[in-house]
Structures are given as structure tokens and as C-alpha cells.
Image (cartoon, rainbow, N blue to C red; front, side, top):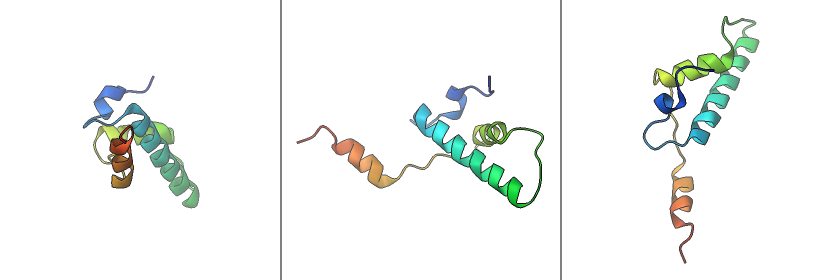
Length: 76
């Protein structure tokens, strides 16, 4: 089980899905950077990405167009 807990990472109304996608994207970036520079990491890229989000080095930024489309759903 990864620590910290999901409720410690997801704040400001972020969905768990958004956090998972953000962590996955950051983990891919970390893995790509390591591969480009022929480096290794003691931890898995996902663990590093989770730690970075928990430390608030990165945050989820939602596209305003997506937010607008969500608010208009269900309206006539």
C-alpha cells in the first residue's frame, strides 16, 4: 500500500480519478527522464510521483473548458 493515503493527496475537491491520472502522468515523466539520462532510481517512479504530489511539488490543474462542460451537463 502506498503512503500517504489518497485523502491526504486529493484536496480542493479533486477527484481520486484526477489524482490517479496526475500521478500516472508524472510517473511517466520521471521514467522518461531517467531513460533519457541513463539513470536509475532507488524507488519506483510511481512512488516518487506520489511523494511529490503529497509534498505539493505538483498539483492537479483542470482545464476550464472541461469544468464548463461539466456544469452545463443536465441543463436544457
